[in-house]
Length: 242
Image (cartoon, rainbow, N blue to C red):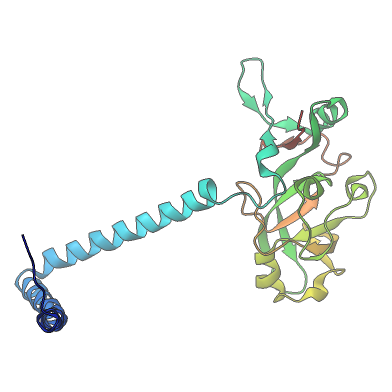
């Protein structure tokens, strides 16, 4: 079978299709307007269902992307594991500070063990009082994960030693919202639950705590927090290569 194409004819067909596309779109719009005028309640219900469906799909994709698809912004995230304490019945339980310290001293399996516990505080002082979510963490937490401060410094080993000065790290959203992204906040004193803390650094813009919307971090204090459970149940451990 032999086909012979005339380029002039092909050009005319292409131009015809180009002109027909807007006409088809206009016809679809006119039909949609007629249906809307004929049954506005049904049309509004359809638009509402579509809007909710699109919004739900976008929210689900955002969650899946942030939890499953996007890698954790830590050094060697594939080497991180979670350690749980278990009760006599085998149920998962939060670590206490003495339990965490005991595990840390006896550790022979991991490169390091760091603890994280939920916490909240009243931030007062220069602006209106604000209730914020935070975390109490062991001082080696950021260094073990390979996270550096966006401004200032992260915690150092002496920061969670008994009797050490109280220090804090601001998460980036609080740094922007409360302090207008002013880097001079580093080194200043803030009041948390009425106690003065020195801001030693600001966390990077894209850093997020696991399963947390924490706005501030303070060191886990073995002397004052000794009887408190690590309520988040997520001590993070850096695995060895062995």
